[in-house]
Every structure is written in structure tokens, then in C-alpha cells.
Image: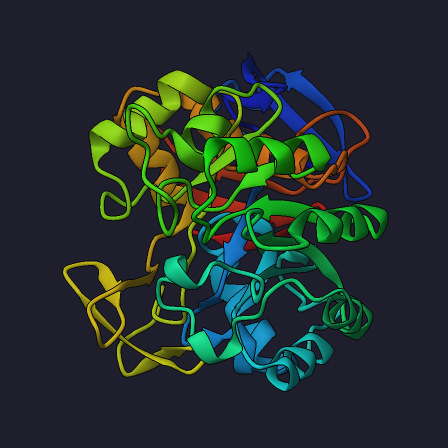
Length: 365
């Protein structure tokens, strides 16, 4: 199969010419158009590290059919790989949710689960239910890891014995992300030195950055080895804040949606675990008014970041190559010869024309 696109995003640069797919993999790029005309660009499928739910489905409370419904809707937004994300909950609820994660949903690739908790700071829970929060507990962690495919965990590194948990997670190949935290810069540095690789939704639900107390935000922004995740919906971060993050950390910014069940849904009532949600003016809130995830899609995040001045190639990498790098993936978030053909074709307005997973066209505009 040949895609007569004008260019393809290869290792951070747009290479003119079309793309050939053979047996589900990229076979060639830079090809002349078959009929003399080429349109659109082929880019790596998006990789979302934080998806709580989508299209009316809350991953903490669904089954294989729910994953199928949400997966089909995620594909339409250009996401070809993702981490279903579970917020803080009681142990039995987390174990049950982990047991329901399918190997495949028939849609985007499920890369494993992002456990956003329960080892979070009581003062920085946001909308996470306090009843499920726990101080670091090695035995509980082992039970969670044994229950399902945990790939990433968000924890507050300042909690007692959190550094020891980072060691355990590293041993199991689970990526550690710092978040929902009141950590000082020194405490964050200790976690990064211990092996934490990234920060969950930078600025949100963490100690504020101030001029004498930079906290986890400042510690992360000045380290070249730490990827910072941001929600670029114009609500979680002011545009100027997003621009500041980009200027400080371009190339190690990962776009995430933090999407909830209300994202790409047609209306109705939704929840995030046990938390009831309302959506008004694009903002998702809990009953107490606290922000509770988003209805952002990844293609919207790319457009928003690009509109704030990020080069298109870099904004696209922030939605694909950078999050894939966080997980240590070599076969996702990139287009190159021999790699799986998980890709999105965008038109000149950055609208999605088609989406491919493993070389199979799954979405056609």
C-alpha cells in the first residue's frame, strides 16, 4: 500500500514524499506521488500516557466491551497507543479494574495501565478520593503489580518510604512519575536520582513554583533527563505557562489529555471512579468545583501547542515520540523503515484524514 502524502514526519523532521506500507510495517518513505499529486502529511500515531476514560467509558469501572467502545473513539482522535489510567481508589476496586484490562481492544494498542495513586500526598489529591489514598506500602504495591499490567505509577516522592517504592517499581520495569505531590525541589531531586523519569501533569496538583521554593516544578524543568507531562487545553495551564514550559523543556515535553469519560461523548452524566463530573465551558469539574481531568483530545493538544509557537514537527513529537520515550518504546511514536505502520494522515488544517494501526486503515474522514 502506498500513501501519496506530501511528507512524512521522520525523526523530528518532515521528509517530502509518500510512504509505502508492506505487511503492516513502513517499507519506504520519500516516494514520488503515483499520479503527480500529493496531499497531507503522515505522522506517527499519538501516544497518550494518561487516559482515565473516553466516549462515555470510565476505565476504572468498565470491561472489555467498554475498552472496545473507548478505543474506537480514541482512534478517531489519532491515538494509536495509550495507557488507561486509574485514579486513587480502594484496593479491591483497583484490583478488579486491573483484572479487566484486555490484552487488546481491537483499537489502539493498550500499553499497560497508569496507576495514578494511591500513594499520593493528602494535601495534593485534587479530585482523588481521600478514602483510597495510602502512604507507601510495599505489600500493597506488590499486590497491585501482580493484579494486572501496570506500566506507570504516579506517586508523591516526599512520602515516607516512597524512594524504596521507586526501587521496587524500577525492578519491575514500571515507569515512575512524580505527581499529586507537595515535594520540595530537594525531595524531587532525590526521586529523580533514584530513577523517577517524568512528572504527571506539571503544575497541577503539586507544590507551586515560587522564587525561593521551586518545588517539583522547578526541579523538573532544569533537569535534562526528566520529561514533563502537560495538559494543553487552555484550562489546566494558562497559555503563558505552557509557553514557559515549552521554552524551558522543548524536546522533553509530553502532551497528555487526562481525558475522562465525558471526552468525545454525546452528553449525559459521567463519573471518574466514584467522583461525579460536570462539564461546563470545556472544563470538567467535581461537585466541589475542583478540576477533574479534561475533555481534551490529543489532536487538539497538538494544535494548541503549535498555536502557542511550538514548531509543528516538535508539537507532533510531543504527542508521539516523547511519550513513547518515557515508556522506553522503540516501536511506537515513530515512523521509520521496519517499524509498525501506526500513523495518522493530517491535512493542511491539521484535521485527521485517516488513521492506521499496524498498516490497517481504521479511520477514514
